[in-house]
Image (cartoon, rainbow, N blue to C red):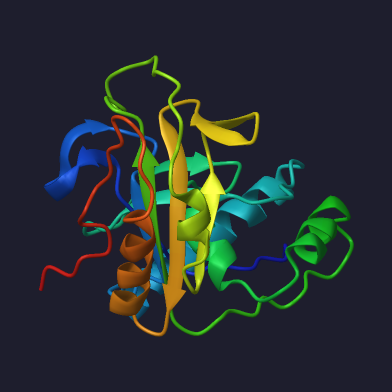
Length: 221
């Protein structure tokens, strides 16, 4: 039986605009952990989607070492629409903000499959990631390179980390360089607290044509 460690379930937002409108994208934001999954849904994913798949691969002589990231649709029954042989993005940003275990030690155990995978320790609470994208992201394939303002102020917000996705540094100034530009990620004791911190930091940042969703991690019920 292969060693398997699960990350918290996360929800991502694929559509470009609020209320799931617009084109599909690589992801406009995410939050973790996802609390609305039932015990039986989690049990199904653990036993069928995860453990059975990896055990079958090992039995066929093609053991998998690394991060395997399933994309799920929470229908009845649960549907798996993709497997990524990498971390999900922007879900990874929320996971890293919550992870307390040394990430290098985790990767080291993957590189050396005989090594023991360290116990994964998680920060209590929630993490929310808001993606700031270039104008037209989701439809356009080319984007203008424009200066980004307010990064230093945003980085001073408590419990916030800003991940660079599509930027370049010119003479000490960051410019946009792609569709998804920045991932503003925050954590808090509650989902609402993490969301408020993320959007508070977003308010400091600006660049020409900047677009983002305003409904990431917004409770609708």
